Length: 268
Image (cartoon, one colour):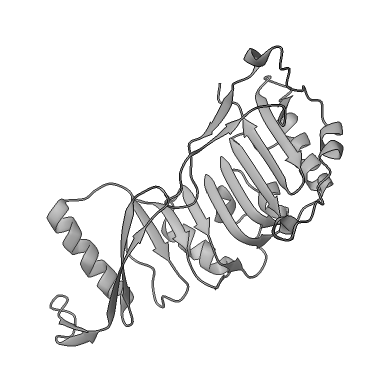
């Protein structure tokens, strides 16, 4: 318990219940969190102003938020990364969040999303998206950004084929760099995805071990939609086939088997 006063317009001697935590993130960075039981937005703004007055910080912010915070969203500019931590979240909250922070390019959603996201939702405009809870194929069908990672998505081979055909014909997904889909069956040992069916529906080129120089040895994923995550490298070996966009010959590398589908678009 602390007795504090935040500015002349805030009640003096207000008792705030604060809990301070220090978290070590996967990328080695440290996060300091302060949980406040009452007036969290007022406390947040006061701490932000105090930090800015000391360090004169003007760079982009990472915002970790929750639907449990009542009232208006924090008045913060230059928010580039958002992570939502809660039990559930609804489409209206996502819309309000992304409308309030239109410069957000990275979104990480940990809680279940209750309700359908409309096709014109600003959610699909975000450049880098990570979604941990269950979702459907409309999430990647409606995506217009660069990188999407879905961890519990229900989809069929035809859903993936439809997506690939639109990318190959240059009908959609012009800005796509990476797509990673994990089926809902991944956690219980299922094997529902027929990779051969997906590959047979598109024109592709297999990896030639006698000519490994025809493709990059690795694909580097530089963007990390999950706040605090680490960039990854993937070997483009015989597990990946190469597909091309018809109008400009843009190359991409496709992995489809078991419970996982990955698509990496070549950067050059």
